[in-house]
Image 1 (cartoon, rainbow, N blue to C red):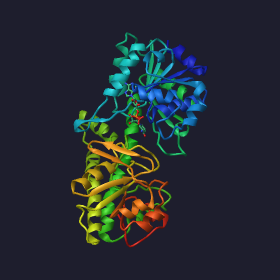
Image 2: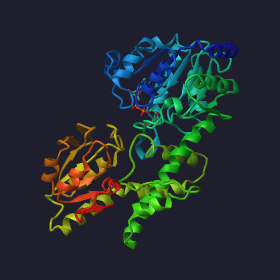
Image 3: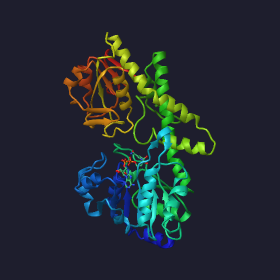
Image 4: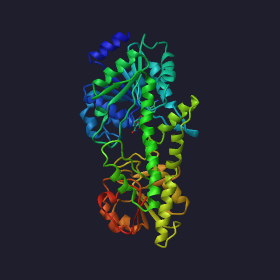
Length: 433
Ligand SMILES: NC(=O)c1ccc[n+]([C@@H]2O[C@H](COP(=O)([O-])OP(=O)(O)OC[C@H]3O[C@@H](n4cnc5c(N)ncnc54)[C@H](O)[C@@H]3O)[C@@H](O)[C@H]2O)c1
C-alpha cells in the first residue's frame, strides 16, 4: 500500500485535508490551494468554519481576497468525515502548556482520534503542531493504529514543524524551508514529496524525533538569546549606555553574531511555550535544561521591570503610579498583528492595575482585550488619547502608530521597544527600557 501512496504523490494528483484552521492551518490550506491542490479544512469551532465558508478570514496573514482567489480549490467543514476521501491529512492544532508548564498534547490526541475514525488505507498523516520529541512515534502512531490499520502496511505518518512567522511578508509558508521526518523511511519520502509540491526547499531528516527537536531548538535558541539581551539591557542602563546603540553596533559584525532585542517579555503561541516542551522531554530522560530555566527567570520578570520603569518615570514627574493614567500603546505580542496570546502586555496591565494605576490601552490591531480578568476596549490611536495619559507605555511597535504624535503629545513616554529611537524621535520626556 505504501508503494501506492508514493505513486499517487508522485503523480501530483493528491488532495489534502487540514485539521485545525488557525494561524498555521489556514495559511497552509491557502498555500496548497494556490499550488492547485484541492484542500479541505476541518475545525471544531463552528464559527471559524462558518466565517471561512462565507469568505471571511480570522487570520492576519490570510485576507478575504485570498479566500476568494482560492475558493475553487478549498472547502471548510465541521465534519471530520469530509476529510476521509483526502489523501494527505495535516494536523495543525494548538499545543499549549498545562499547569506546571507541562506539555498539553490533548488537542493532538483529540485530532488523532478524529482522524483514526476516518483513516483508510492509502492515507498519509502529517503532524505540524510544535511538540516534544516522541509525540509522532509514541502517541500519534498508536492512536492511528487503534483503527486497526498499520503504519507502512496501510498508512504513512510524518512530522514537519510549521515555521510560519505571522506578519512576516517576506517569508510565508511557500518559501520557508521545511524539515520533514517520518515515522518510517517511506513516510519521510512521502512527506518530502508532498511539501516539494508547494514549498521551495525541503530538508528530510532521519526520524520524526529529529524533526520535532529541530523546531524546539529553533525556538529555545530565541528564548535564551532574548533573555541574554534582556539581562544586558539592565546592565547597559547601570553602566550608562544605550542598549539599542550597543546592539546596532554589534550587529555590524558580518559573522558570528545575530541581533536580538530586549523588551517587556516574550509573547505568542510559540517562543514562551516551546522551550518547556523541550525541558519536559529532557527531564523524562534525566537531563537538565539550565539555560531554559535561567531564561525563564529573566524573561518572566520583564513585566515587573517595566512597571518599575513606569513608576520611576512618573516619580521623576512628581507623580505616584497609584491613580496615574497609564496608556499602554500596543498590546499584541509582536508588531502589525492582532494576536495577543501570551503577550507581555497582559502581565504588564495586570501588574500596573495591581499597583493602583488607571490603565487603558490603544492598539490599531486589537479592538478588544478580554483575557483572565482583563476586559478593555482600545482607545482611538490618536493624539488626543496620548494627551489624556500621564504616561504612554509603548509595549508593541506597530507601524500604523504615528510615533511623531506620541512624542509630541504625550507628557511622558516609556518606550520598551525603541519604537521612537528607531525612528529618530527623541525627547527628555522619553524613557527607554
Ligand atoms: N502561531 C504561530 O505563529 C505558529 C508558528 C509555528 C508553529 N505553530 C504551532 O502550530 C500549532 C497550531 O498553532 P496555531 O497558532 O495555528 O493555533 P490556533 O489556535 O491559531 O489554531 C488552532 C485551530 O485548531 C482548532 N482545533 C483545536 N482542536 C481541534 C481538533 N481536535 N480538531 C480540529 N480543529 C481543532 C482550533 O479551533 C483552532 O481554530 C501549535 O502547535 C503551534 O505551536 C504556531
